[in-house]
Image 1 (cartoon, rainbow over the protein chains, first blue to last red):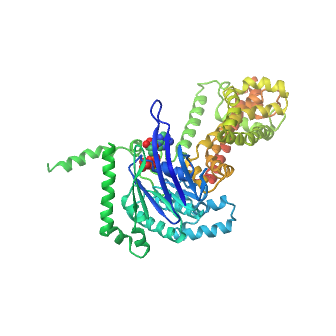
Image 2 (tube, rainbow over the protein chains, first blue to last red):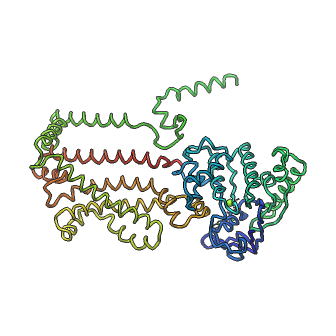
Image 3 (cartoon, rainbow over the protein chains, first blue to last red):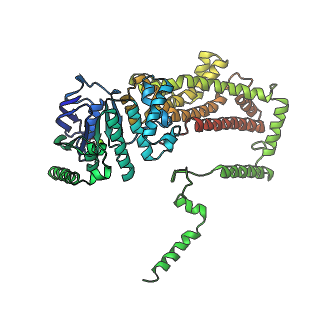
Length: 261
Length: 295
Ligand SMILES: Nc1ncnc2c1ncn2[C@@H]1O[C@H](COP(=O)(O)OP(=O)(O)OP(=O)(O)O)[C@@H](O)[C@H]1O
Ligand SMILES: [Mg+2]
């Protein structure tokens, strides 16, 4: 259980200007097996929130706890998938996947055995020994997701991981992440700019608003269950209540924007 | 209206007629699969380089054959080659040519090895730690721009006229670029790569070993190439005092007797050795950092 209690973040502003209040009094819980998705206009503090959870950033005020223990820095219980995959180009695909296990001192054969399971899950069997710089963008992103999963974190943190992918690859990746999430029973915190993606993947949705960054709306979502219970992704996304919800969220975001402007 | 397409076609004509290389000045040609479009300066240079060298040799031969320059100032390429064969057969000042080459190469590469041994860890440490940077930066930045000839007397006063002062002088010339290259290499690692490693459970030592040092490798290799070049540059200065062997000694002593063709033989040999070494460094680079500039 991740608990975020009354967290505020101030960035020092540019020379001579006020500090930027990136987050104000934010409360959030991410329970075991929960899939929390954050939506919101650019600059509303989503990445700041993710960096807090990852332990890269300490809050100006407030507390973050993971299973009761305060978060004091990054750790392998919270693996991050970056918008730009951030793979290690000097390692081939399987060594990138197994990188976390290598850091933990797992023997080569054992970590390859684990990594190979993800290799087939990710549909990259033929590319086991390929250099990562020869893969397409979508394949690189899949390796980035696989690398985080191979390390077996408690919480998976993803900052717009699919933003750069085409519609088809993106939907395949969404399905893949959902299936792995279900199979491994992890908590996930996902940032996205796509309302459809947010609705399809999350069990819980937070909508954030800028200046100061805060959570303005929270929703519980049923849609990923439908997919995991056997409906096709297309069917889930075409359902009337899905479309209605999508419009509701879009109205909220646009209204927020106009208020801020 | 109806002749608009036709006008288009005639307007396109002059561009078509332009020669191939002239068009490439404006627009890169589409690449073959596996290459990257639009990389600045991409393209084959070998034929051009060979042509340029041949042209220079022909011009050199022509200038000397026409008697435009006295052989004392510039002997012809043929004379230089003849001199080279002569030195190859009977040596120079009592030592065979291979010994001169060997002695010089040993000095440069001993200094180079020492500079790598100290400069790479030092540069990495300076890149990783503000304490190390604060400690060593002033000294490095102070001595770096000083020409080795200026501190050669100090080397001789402190370390005598033997091998030590010679190797140390070259070592100092190589050390600065190698250290600075390793230090710059640390900066070239993407912050996301470091964050990724930490969030996968890496310790600081692991981040240094598994991420920073790997990411710094291309910059380090470039620095080694630059560094060894500095080493050859400093060789002649190092062999100025109390030498009886070495290519630098050969060039210097021949110049005192106005043996211009021997001077040229020495210069060309130094250049060729440095060039061959650089080629092998580049081959090494392609082998161990094939990802350089690709991600
Ligand atoms: N290092 C920083 N220094 C100063 N201000 C920052 C810094 N990082 C972020 N900010 C500010 O904090 C606010 C929130 O930034 P953040 O990156 O969290 O937004 P975001 O929601 O992730 O936006 P996007 O959707 O564009 O990625 C912005 O106003 C931004 O200008
Ligand atoms: Mg962001």
